Length: 373
Ligand code: PLP
Image 1: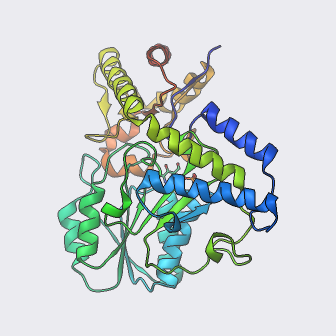
Image 2 (image 1 turned 90 degrees about the vertical axis):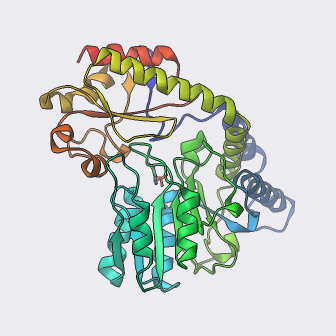
């Protein structure tokens, strides 16, 4: 049975060149980057060359990037640091953020008493910018944390506008760019953003590695104490092969961006039109969404909700019901709960997310699979 992977917002298949790069480092460069001999120096060079490659892709300075194990770690660190050390008194966020943000903000509210304001989500899944501006006018040292591309419905934040607003009112801006890094252009020095986070496994790189961009001039306290790695901010021997794999994956993502984006956009349009043709009454969740994520409410009865993913899985087709962590659960996603009417929330919603490895045949198999439910 041919397996079909349409869950690329959860994670992505590694590019073969990324695997080769990592194997090469594992075989030939096992030195500890902190060692001063040639083995160590060689590993250090890989680390710093990777940092420069990523900086070039992101439009920032290499010194502004810190390697982490993933975006969850990065967002936890930045948000906690902001409250404990940068003396942030209030966080503005939204109810459709990833749990890596929401649960951290929750913790900071409970333990440190930081004030939290939620910006309103409009019916199309975007944030109410006018209300954000009104919230920013309130007193108190503020940090805004809003995601760039929503991982469940694919809505896109106007990062440029939000950044400008934040800085106009002297607020710090943390942006979860996990779903957009490697999939759209960045020039961080031209954006008014203070922190962005990424995970390599979302752009055809390895799991267990990511990075955080921290705008020059912002002083953070260490996340992990120990050695001098990552300027003493995140101690511990670096995963050189992971970092090299991440840099290779990002460089390739940007090298192929134009053609991949055009190809994936066309696939998404094809999928949407075929779904609408085959399932009259099907609705798309979110308005104008990112080119690789399609979230739909199927015009199926409530009883079928729990069975759909299972049935598709039996046919070797992988899609998601919401964010990856909720797959298989019948609990409605916290994102859909914010934007859908009660009656649609009960119906099955599917998140279909594409990559350049998908084909029209994959979509046809999905349609066929759904027709059999
Ligand atoms: N933020 C967004 C928008 C995501 O989609 C994810 C992963 O699904 C994360 C954060 C967390 O990423 P990771 O699990 O790699 O730390």
